[in-house]
Length: 436
Image (cartoon, rainbow, N blue to C red; front, side):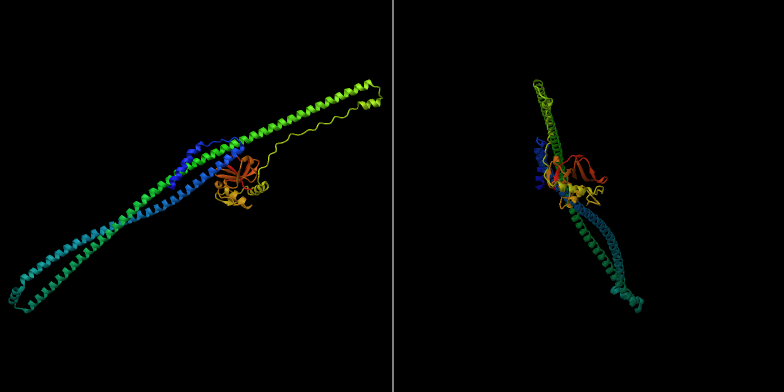
């Protein structure tokens, strides 16, 4: 039931995801939308991780069942071989039984002939006739003794053959019982084999179901990533528009002030010329001394108009401990050139991208998640335009530390190791996270 509910929720997400578009038209609105998209992406990736864990657990169960199935099949094969060997023994015993029976019948027939002969030649009349004819009591007694020995021999031989037949018969019965037991064990093992095969097929079908769900969730995650890229592009576009507008406004203000200064200078020049003309007129109409004329003709030096430089746009710095962030970067850059090791966390002997970021911040007492995907939820989100040294630049499957000026320091790959890259936007940025 849980699996069906999860599959239904994923189907709803897949159905709704293509309808998601960039609809905000302000940087603040886009940043809010991007944070919501990042949260949905993190939730989807968490679902993918859960599905992967369940699939891996199921795969382990299948491996265990496969091992049991192999052991059961081997046991069945061994039982089949034992049954075949037991049948060979039974066949050999039957041959022995037939031979013993035939031997017994042959001896029994010979014994009957001997007995018949003795009784025909002996008996009450026969023994008397033998005694009268021979007249020798010693021969008579000797014949009687030989007859008794012959009786004893036939009796013992018959008893021995009967015992052999009984022994062979008992052995045959024992072998038949053992074969029956082996066949029962074989049937039980074959039943267990069928149960294991059915269970394995069911778990494989469930595993395939998980793969379908994982593929659906990955499709949704890819759409969220595309949407984040669109939001980043839109934010960058609006930031550039603001910068162009600010530059145009500053240029217009500078031009206006320059024009105002030029007009003021022209007015002052005109006023000075007017005063000079008036002074010259006064000098020609009045009789003054040269000194007085000189004094009247000395014009005051016009004041130099003051110049007000254009006012730069004042942008409030983003919140956060920028000095500590710079300390983080300074510390991280000490390890540039050290090796990249997948799964590693050592700043000297080798680390991967998330291990590098985690170990750098651990030096300053901050505990970050281990993987790049989980680090996208660390700290708080800021826009790329607000990024400052020490911020985490999060990509799909990668994370780096922002240095400022568009540069990053990160554990890149096995070929490059820990290095500095001059363009943080060398690949689509999913989010920017501030830790300090």
